[in-house]
Image 1 (cartoon, rainbow, N blue to C red):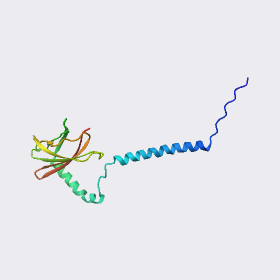
Image 2 (image 1 turned 90 degrees about the vertical axis):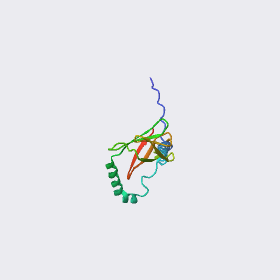
Image 3 (image 1 turned 45 degrees about the vertical axis):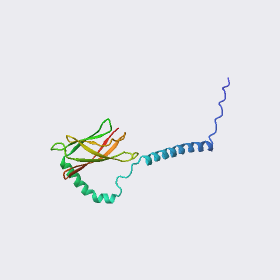
Image 4 (image 1 turned 30 degrees about the vertical axis):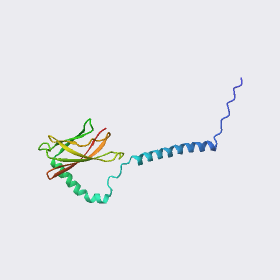
Length: 159
């Protein structure tokens, strides 16, 4: 019995190699462009505008941080169902009844404009923002003053 002859194998030509190389490098380049676009589109900005100036202020910032730590102030920051930011204050002596609080809300990716928040005292060392915060996740830079003492806090709210 005669066995059937196998079909002749297709030759691997230069065109095949060109197609493989173009497909491989084309995929790599396309992925790099997409990732670069995402990186540039979601970068929120610089940490400091001028690193030399920041380095000159560093020791003062450390002294301010130590002074704030000595105050022992704590904040509990929440957002209620109406998107009002609520802040409860605590200190070693009790709530901060006469404090003044202001904050700036920044979107983490810079996709929404900053929101300046002003707070009213609602009693018992608690404060509520006068305007609601838009939906989403927000980073808050909170400034608290009571008498001659000041403190700055960073917190995040939303989901």
